[in-house]
Structures are given as structure tokens and as C-alpha cells.
Length: 280
Ligand code: PAF
Image 1 (cartoon, rainbow, N blue to C red):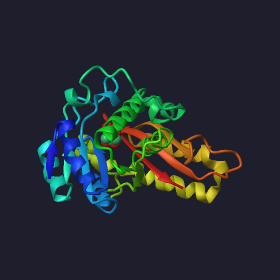
Image 2 (spheres, rainbow, N blue to C red):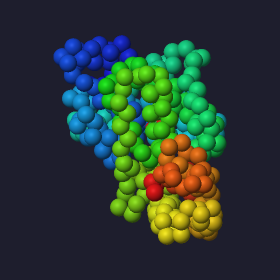
Image 3 (cartoon, rainbow, N blue to C red):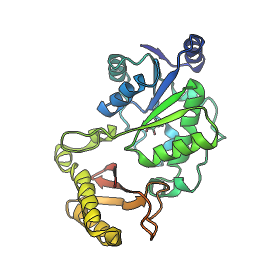
């Protein structure tokens, strides 16, 4: 695997691949890679002969007081994992390379950016969309893969790609979970042993809520969601949101009940904020 920190060098290497007619699959990450990321790399191989990953902790998507400084940076270990996963090229720029001048142009996503995650992390999705577009421009992939754990992020990137006519196919991959159900996340490393033991309750709660909605019908969503949130609170969770939304636009379910639904949640255990979701 070759690692590039400069856009010009990466572009030159990719130019050669394109000249040989090779398609490019791309997996952007913020590093501190886990099995979920590796599953994306493996899936990428089924979409194109050349697989490119990026590792960049993007300051623009972190709010004031969030964990930008604390976010684990483990480039050497990440390189070993990516090489073992057969990734061909790694793009690992520093901030000066990706933001050589203060960023004045942004991708400002529509209303979707202000719902759910956006309500609790203002500006987060503007930062995500802007860096993803920049990374897409640097790599110019044919296909890009993202995890469904970041459900809203995936929706937003799909919409950006479609509306800005980017010639990139966006693939969403299922969340990879630990044996006890906890969604894999770089932020799980912040959990104390006691919090780690408690953490699977979030996914269990989503499953119980889904089963209850299927049993009692969509008319009971409000009461069932409140009960699920109360159950988390009793076990020490501080929930930002736990909501049943339409898969199509993340709005509350329409009264006709015709739309497919998803349960989305963000909740804190101690100082660690975990997110998860479950389609119904
Ligand atoms: O999902 C992530 O790790 C990040 O939001 C992404 C897509 C790499 C952009 O920084």
C-alpha cells in the first residue's frame, strides 16, 4: 500500500490507474480503524480493482467543546490494518494540505442538516459535506462506501452527490456490531469498563422498541418511544434524541403510516456520545 499526504502525488498515482482503465472505490474515514471500517474496505474490493482509503480528522465537522483534540489518531496502526485489508492507496493529508487557506466556500446542506444530529451538533453536516466533496475532488472515485451507522450522514451524502451531479455511486453498508450488539465506533474507546458493559443497552432498546411498534402499531409510537427513553434514563443514559422517523426524509411518520420507518438515537453514557439506528 502506498500512502500519500499530498493531493498532487495522489492524483498522479490515480491518473495512472485510470489510464489503465481501472475503476476506483473510495472509503473516507477519520482513522482509528475498527472492524466496521475494514468491512467497508473489503466491500470496496467488490466494486472496483483499485481501493483508496483516506484518514483525516476533519476539524470543520466538530463543534466547540466536542472531541476534536481528543479524537484518537493512530495512523501507524491504521496503515497496518489497511495494508492487511488489501487497500492500494491511502490518502492521509494534514490540515494544511486539505485546508491551505481558511475555507470560505462550504457545502451547506438543506433542511436535513438541521434535524436530529444537526439539532444537537449545529454545523456538523456542513463540515462533513464540505470535506467529503473535497475528498471526492481529490480522489475522483467511481464508487464511495459509507457505513449506515451514520444514517443521516449517508442520506446527506447521497443527496449531495445526486444534486451536484457527482459521477460517483454511493454505497451504504450495514453497521458492524460487537457480539453483544454494540455498534462499532472509534468513540467506543472512550467508554470505561462499566460503561462498555452498559453500552449494548442502546441497541437492545432500539430492538425492543421496534418489536413493540410492530406489535402495537404506529399509533403507539409516541408512548412507546417515551417509555424507551425513560428506560435508558433509568440506566444512566442522557438521551439527545430517540425518535421514529421516515426513512425517506427523517421527518416524523406521516399519519397514513405508508412510509418505511427507522428508529434513530443519540445518547450519552458518561461523557461518551453514542449513536445508533434500526430500520423498521
Ligand atoms: O464518517 C466519518 O468518519 C466522517 O464523517 C467522514 C465521512 C470521513 C468525513 O470526515
